[in-house]
Length: 138
Image (tube, rainbow, N blue to C red; front, side, top):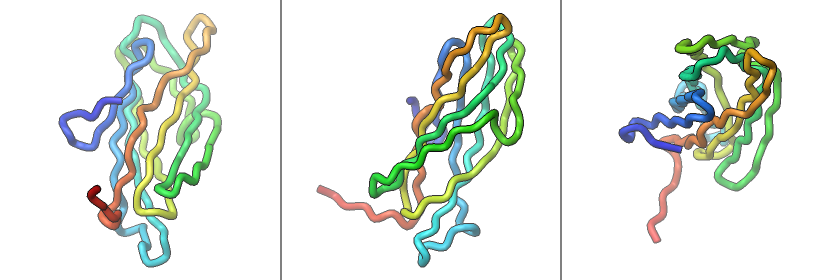
């Protein structure tokens, strides 16, 4: 995991596939008084390799600040299984609700190369932070 210039953007590169994530807290969709906090995250997947690849499946592990973890598995992303030729990228935006004002997400995409090989690509762990989180100094 790498934080790019403290902008709240995270990236990981696995086998020449670069995944960049930018989470944003959605104030207008959140209801802190009801312990309902919502984030959007935009992900860009870039093929920096020499082979065409296709995103087949996704796996997410979402953890709130109490340690409660939810796992999400599915085919593709936002209803698509994008094919990325060398130099191409795909970007999408999705969202995640939590019952706490902070948490984090991590995961993997299963990719398939043009020769049929499947491999996992890391989605960098990224922080979900709202303005309602309580900080304590030790």
